[in-house]
Length: 481
View (cartoon, rainbow, N blue to C red):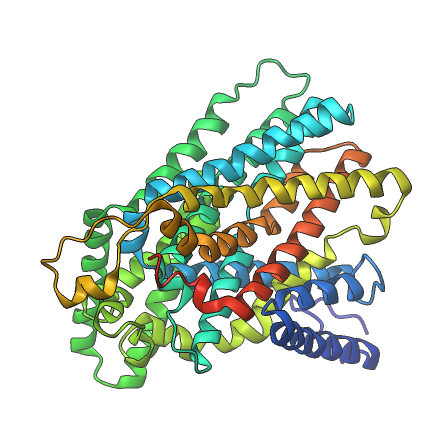
């Protein structure tokens, strides 16, 4: 007998489907652990599992599963960026904003310029394809960047008496430069999509699709960057929190209320950012920095903890947002949502289509060029003066006027932080894939660009992880900060 019910059908899944899903999630976590142990870059294992299980190779995952995993993975990406905002040292970011902008601008302009030279002049592809390829390779994977910084945090928590990378000068420069690159990358994606949609329609104006994302992105970025704007929002949220705590007495209920506040604030900033024409990831980062500001107002901030004892203790306090994140979100994030995000990147790579003769050698040359284009951003940290001279003497007697160290000494102290920054900026990822797919490129230039995205996404984290594994203390820039 047929039933016309307004409800989803509940049926027992097949044994094969259950085994595939179980093995997929299990192997995702195993592969991350293996690569994290070997080279401090567990995300490479997750990308590889996505390639193997997904459409590129074995096709074990149904297309509906891949769509669901992609969407859940994007939630994981938003949470990764939210954590980056929660852990960000806004005070260090402000002091190094000019240097961060120089690194970001170099990381955008050089890939686009070299891409046009090689793809348009050298390979004779169309200018639009060359520009689209350069725009895709101008974006740095923000999710990968924050994952690498978090990996450094785990390195610190496993017994190393060194600073959390997220709270160092070089970590703040890397985070803000990657964020700016992604914001500009999504603006370029909007421009490319508008150009593609307006082909043949000369009446379509490109002014609004260009200016609106730029204006909204700048406005959002200024919220945490300017102390007064961040503090106004944070104080407002803190007063609401105090009012709430006067009503809710139970510790557990207060924690659930704080979690709800975190979800609502993040959802609000993400939605507002998207509908205003900017990046959802920028909204997530701003939300994290604002919530960190609430902890700052209440005396639980990362900044104050760093100034007190050299490392963050905010996660130890059950009143702070970082503690709530660690208790209620981090396990789900680390073992399910983040692995699904990186595996969905792997599933989006046309692996078998990359191996035809001309595409192969052209892709390898282009990949090397795009690796170099991002690696060169570190030149600014070599040339830029360190923020302090000899700290130990200065701390013993602040009245001592120390002469600036010689240039050779500054450059030697900046060598490993520069290497870390340059390699970490190489990684591409989700934004690069989005831009490349939006551009409606011809097949061959698209595959050449995919080669560069794939190799940079793998090589960047792998080399960064190796450098962190053996030279973590030097990369943290304790003498360069």
